[in-house]
Amino acid sequence: MTLFYSLIRPLLFRLDAERAHDLTAKALRVTSRAPLLPRLIRALYAWEDPILAVDWSGLHFANPVGVAAGFDKCADLVDGLAVLGFGHIEAGTVTPRPQPGNPRPRLFRLPEDAALINRLGFNSPGMVAVARALRARRSRDVIVGVNIGKNRDTPLERAVEDYVATFVALAPLADYVAVNISSPNTPGLRRLHERAALETLLRELTRLNRALPHPRPIALKVSPDETPDQLEAVVRAGCDAGIAAFIATNTTLARDGLHSRLAIETGGLSGRPLTQHTRQVIGAIYRMTHGTPPVIGVGGIVTAEDAYQHIRAGARLIQIYTGMVYAGPAIARDIKQGLARRLRRDGFTSLEEAVGVMVAA
Ligand SMILES: Cc1cc2nc3c(=O)[nH]c(=O)nc-3n(C[C@H](O)[C@H](O)[C@H](O)COP(=O)(O)O)c2cc1C
Image (cartoon, rainbow, N blue to C red; front, top):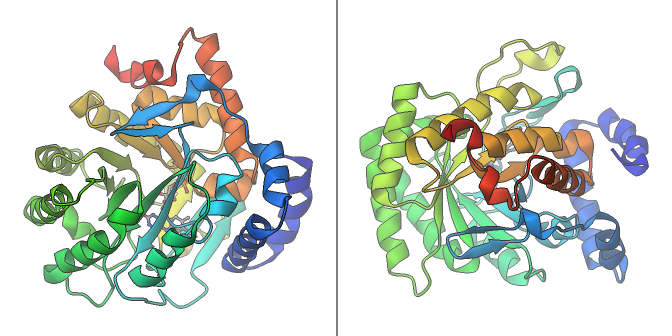
């Protein structure tokens, strides 16, 4: 952690967690528009090493470290996050119509567990506002994905219509699309993991995608709470539909071994308690796919070692949310430096060589 964040963090942690997030977002927006500041921040935080470059579905990532969905719901923080050295940013989840999400408080810090619990429930400005923000972004050197979902009041039987609407509106403005069927905070959403519903959804989206002048890679974001059989069925459906990646994982409903008094809050748990669990899911998917399509690993990454072990378990790219809250804005740089060191130490000449080595043997 930088000296800067070790001073700021206690102040932020005194605030309600969502208020602290809103302030951080505001700071990112303001600094990205100020003259010279972005260049200064980039000089402090950006650090690249060719050993970390990753290619996926025609996209070139300068490094594998991305911002997970949920941090930038509106796609208006892309410029601010880009200067911190992330290789990609997944905006969203975006719903077709604007919706406020659940009542506050709905985001909780669990410092004793280096975790968060959230039940935001897809607070989204809606796809029209997000399309505007995507068009307005200035950074063109960072990969931007858009994560799509359904409105809370859309019945599950009509969920496909919501995904289709957001896909049509946003896919042409993003580098890739993530299909979120795994948030625990929208009632019934995880039922889209069921084979028939998933096949219908993916068939429809891949059909629309093929009709685009430039089809986008479509990634499917999965829950960590599926049984091995359910996960296998989801992976099979995803592969059959020709999706380009699995994103593993979303937050969990499990509450094992937590110490914080806020562990009783309803919602999805993220951060340190998810690390091992997510890694097992990454490994399980990699074992089934042998890396084609690749896995984007997200869950419980706070240090470079966490990221490295996710990669060794099968992740080609990684993403972070909760780790940023605990480790601060230098997290992308610190993870990249630690990853490059570990790759060289272990005799790899590229990150891609290390993907899945724990599983492949
Ligand atoms: C406050 C918060 C909001 C989130 N919102 C979304 C979301 O809108 N869509 C989504 O797919 N995942 C969302 N997530 C899940 C993250 O993208 C990620 O999958 C999960 O938090 C595990 O990663 P982490 O341990 O690095 O936080 C959210 C997570 C948090 C903590």
